[in-house]
Image (tube, rainbow, N blue to C red; front, side, top):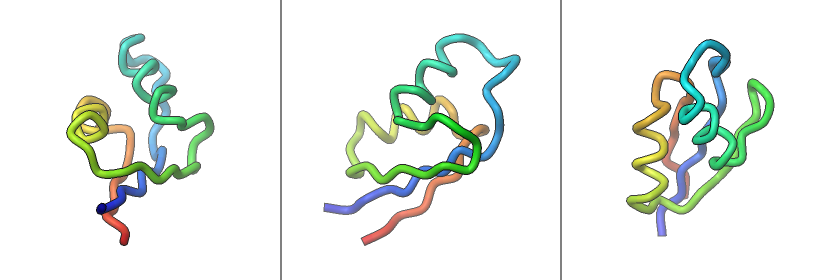
Length: 60
């Protein structure tokens, strides 16, 4: 299964609470940190919601 590397690039301060909650649900805590998740529709939807705050790469 494909994997996604999600990197937290821009602060969620001054954005709505649901976007802050989505960042936390993805497992991102500090700027510059990265997590790897399986490429599922649920994760894709979460990334879509906060795409202006994160950077996404596909990894194998």
